[in-house]
Image (cartoon, rainbow, N blue to C red; front, side, top):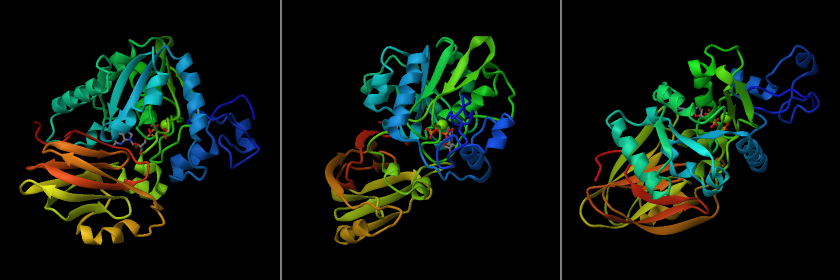
Length: 362
Ligand SMILES: Nc1nc2c(ncn2[C@@H]2O[C@H](COP(=O)(O)OP(=O)(O)OP(=O)(O)O)[C@@H](O)[C@H]2O)c(=O)[nH]1
Ligand SMILES: [Mg+2]
């Protein structure tokens, strides 16, 4: 161990154990390298052999970071919004000045006006008892909302920490800000490490910016109940929307089942009239329609990448223009008619019914 830190992921650099975070070969450390081997391999080969930071280590680092911070930018993924506000994380931020950056708005179809998304987010924050939080919709992918975000960050004092659950785009948001005037403009080659796999950032990593401002990345808080955390990293990549959100529309009547094999099934128990269900997920998730008689076959289907053995069921009433949100997977939206559904999800997976995010509003 030495007193240097990897600028990409924040891990303390060390030259002894290649299988631990922060490893750099000794000769590179002498050359003042500030990037660990893991970050180098993520950046150049898209490979992360060491996997994710441990939840407890992440929590300890976030806690220390919050103590240090004068203000906090909480980053959430609009497509996994409910998962992004876990009570233990919000508890850590109590008493801090918070700006909420709702990221990945580029993934929402252009037919949904951004003003409508803003109203939807505000209504959800009211519902969660967070009506006073300053909110900005952003996309680290295309830069939308960043001038407004930069202005809000300047109200948070000199030490600003980016926090949020894993994989919401904290490092991506920070990376984009570092290229803007607030972050000092063009930087050297080393930047916060970004990867599609959750648990990339390992410890708080600070970046000095003009006028004494310090922007700091932090490891992601690991939430409970997210389906993407229960499956293999490869399958998680398929179900989490990265480049586009895909939707699948099914007319349903009693006895129909809309499902993703080995992951989730939504069984129609009754529908008032002709009902429609729309499944929203990343484009790699394979939705299909079947019948209740076939259900066991689809749920018990053994998949190495979705090793889910235990299931739970819930009966849910879904009115038109409501979503059945399933944490870390996506959501099923009802159109035209109210439906009574039986939801089959992996044991411990979180779900909630909410006003619809996409499509005509009530
Ligand atoms: N489409 C889209 N993808 C994004 C956006 N921001 C980040 N991503 C992607 O989301 C994934 C996670 O990004 P990171 O910046 O590594 O997320 P993080 O919150 O720092 O993740 P951890 O360090 O693991 O907690 C990467 O595949 C990014 O390319 C965005 O605005 N739009
Ligand atoms: Mg990160």
